[in-house]
Every structure is written in structure tokens, then in C-alpha cells.
Length: 132
Image (cartoon, rainbow, N blue to C red; front, side):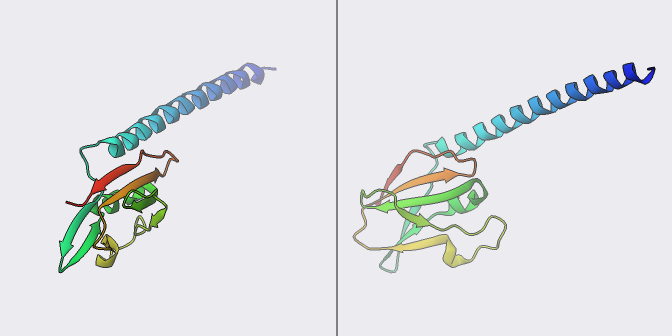
């Protein structure tokens, strides 16, 4: 019978530690989720750029490559169409080849719409970028 109070104490201490660990986990994951959402909701950051080189129009997505570990999927559309085309980014920890940093677009391209799905499942609003 003497071990029963000790076992009850250990049980309650274990429960309290589990509750504290759960609270810390929830708080840390919600903070990181907020940082992730803010990172991609900042309208002053351009996700893509256009580059005209040797008569070709290039879609350059350096920002998306830099942040590829936070992105699950990138979809884009050309000239006002819905973002249905999938832009495949290099793997998160893999080496980046030069060819993976841009796409060649038709010279008639006027705009690109971009939509992201982040690794936490959140989706961004569609952004429209115009060729200048």
C-alpha cells in the first residue's frame, strides 16, 4: 500500500508534463504557421520576375526556389487564365540546376497568375503579374 501514493504522484506529474508539452507544441506550431503565412502574404515581395533575353521571354522564380521547402505546390496561368499549370520546383534539399530556375514563355504573354499551396496545407490568394 505504501507505493500507491507514490504511483499516484508519478501519474499526476506525468499528466501535467504531457499537458505542458502539448501546449508548447501547439503554441510553437501556430507561431511557425503564422510566420509561414506572413512570408507569402507580403504583397511587396514578388514571387516571380520576367526577363527578356535574346528575343525570349523568361519566367524567373528565384523567390519560390529559395522558399521551396515551405511550398507544396505552385500553379500558374498565362494571360488571365486560371492557374492550372503546375510549376515543378527543385526538391527541398537537392541541388538546383540552372535550367530549373526559369521557364520560357510565349512572346505573346502579357500576364501570369500564380497560386501557392504551402506545406501546412494553407493556400494563398492568386497573384497576377504583368509583363512590362
